[in-house]
Image (cartoon, rainbow, N blue to C red; front, side, top):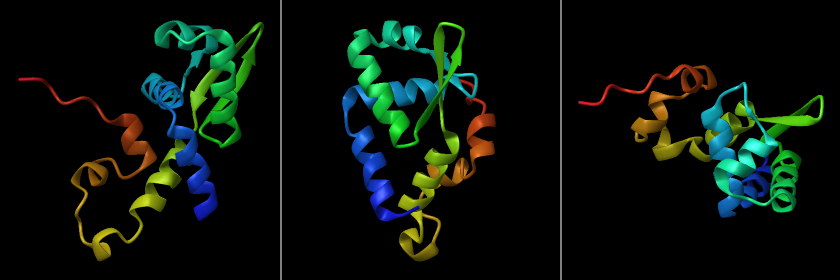
Length: 119
């Protein structure tokens, strides 16, 4: 990932609403969620939501697929993975210093990670 691309992605996530949308879509998994459900869950008006979804799509963090009258959105996990890799590349001169990142160091691990049982 190029520095300029990473900066654009981070700038997109730098807005509270866009960050909330992206996190909701990450939690929804590969199946994603339709636009109206996103707006309802986050209490974002349709016009504002459309603007934010367009911005996130433009930088490659999400994708939308039309299903009849609705658009179904999902997170682009590969872009998220590339951004995390870019941010942590050569961290601490190659020493293991990010235990939370190491625990889910691949897209497959993040997608399949099961929540730990609460005691």
